[in-house]
Length: 367
Ligand SMILES: NC(=O)c1ccc[n+]([C@@H]2O[C@H](COP(=O)([O-])OP(=O)(O)OC[C@H]3O[C@@H](n4cnc5c(N)ncnc54)[C@H](OP(=O)(O)O)[C@@H]3O)[C@@H](O)[C@H]2O)c1
Image 1 (cartoon, rainbow, N blue to C red):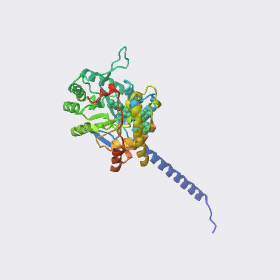
Image 2: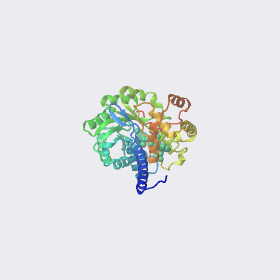
Image 3: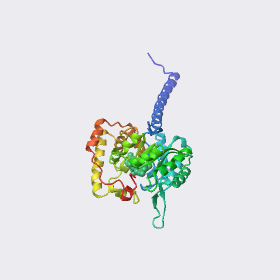
Image 4: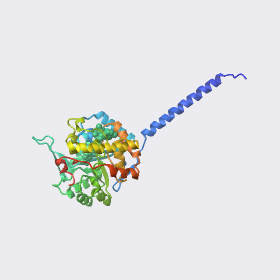
């Protein structure tokens, strides 16, 4: 029987084809939306600061880690929010000041979507001999001056988490934290934090005003907080924010030799990146890479997933100044490490060689 193709059939076929295409486009849009609207899980620091389970360390965007690219840095911050990472970490002394300005620029018009953490207590005090001179200053006067500058640079009326960057051994912690507590009463700050404080100081600070978070270096190659610091903050109900969770980029394979870094990159002077210590630590990074490859993830993702697996009270803040690394890092939230993986890491990863900082830097931690 002859088939007559009518104009009506042709139109119908064309319409069906258009519908199929539309469906495909819709599916693509859904995937794109899913990627863009991906929301991260939340974790709670201390008694009540809910933040995305991974934060974004902004320091390297303006200081210490070589060349800055403001456009890419701001695009990275904006991309973080699209992907559900809304916890930003900065400090008055990053730059100094320029990193807070950068963050202020990036969050402008969208302030309420972010949780902003910044730090005070390392005061820029240039002298004729040393134009970059800095001093530890935990005085009440410095607390009160610093917050005004930070609020202005960040373009906000409140800081969500205000840390004492380093404990000033010359000022009783009660004075510093007492003054920081006044800022909470005045509504300029929501929560207080400490950075690199020793257990006895954490206890005294917490007795003066509730502390929400302690920020200290913690990663696959810096495990010393496990001995006393983590048990102390857990006992007191204080959250823990591990900084440099990628071992300042070394665990991700970002560099294998400081000569690859910019001339003014501060890591060139790091004791872990020199001589015999570097040789030893390259073995450690190779082991991280080996385990990551076996799991089909990147070394950086393994390093971050390991920190995330140490407890729901930890919120790591990996730093990057570029979108590609940020996207990779946030993928670590989807990585599950089994008890076997964690045991293997404990058994096979050697301890790092070399101090975290040079002697001057080491004198400012654990006070
Ligand atoms: N409280 C304190 O005393 C203190 C001290 C240091 C840092 N912090 C805070 O903690 C944050 C994180 O620490 P951090 O930045 O020093 O160290 P980190 O997070 O361990 O590592 C940052 C380095 O890793 C590189 N990187 C990031 N993601 C990568 C990836 N997926 N693949 C390859 N390389 C990658 C970055 O490269 P690019 O730079 O090229 O993107 C950067 O060089 C800082 O931004 C800062 O906010 C606090």
